[in-house]
Length: 348
Image (tube, rainbow, N blue to C red; front, side, top):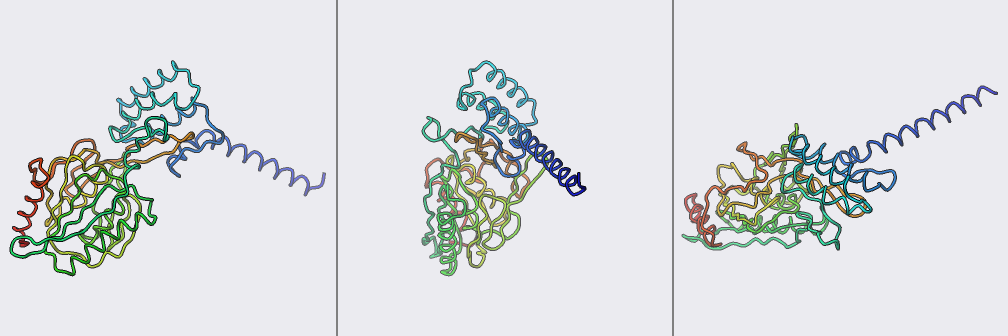
């Protein structure tokens, strides 16, 4: 055999071995490593229900905020007993056991999201509505003008035209009222159940100092949400808008029991600022960061991976966030208290 033929045969054999080894590694580690690197498990072949469930449990253990806890270890063992006792003919047969485990891995903000049409398609943040924000102004005591930015729930389209219009509506309205001489701002987050915080914070960025405004603390790591003029990174969809000049005015933030998840994170972006104060009633208690991992068959894991930490150093997750000033339950109570505080800060 010629030397060149031998070399070609050796190269072909080596390549075959490498391909087989790579496929074996992807088969073994693709579900968990795929979830870490590309956000979803990677399966070479459609998984059996058993492999599907094992991959989901591995992701919960590896990434869930409580995935390394004794509580999760016990919940996983119970989930595995449920799976062993069940007749697993379809992926949906694994969901009751995965429901049990994900509660322990991520807390109340985590869930197995069913495909639409299966009776439980509640996607939490991912199903948030695409209502547009509003920016108005009104005359307060003494003829002063107070800007009110109403910031609703926003599911968005991950940085597409809907999200951009949402952020620009806020940013343009705030810039307009700033130019008109507004002396104070009310940011109304009542009823904002979450969604994509990127457009929310980008739209409000003229009211926030540049730099780090919030942190997500996971298992052994922390990442920051940053504002740079009209650009927001690290929280929700990265987005940049023309935010106009910064407003050096007091900011009152209104919240209630309907303020949750990204609504709470947006509230916390103002927490600890010298010229900001929050009013209303305690929030919903979903101040945490989630990852959504799509699985074969249309279901997804919405898994809590980090707590929200504000600039005061306080960490938040499953408990309601209390405003700086708790007011009565009537909607007008929070706004009245906010206007009174603004008046003490030279606005009204």
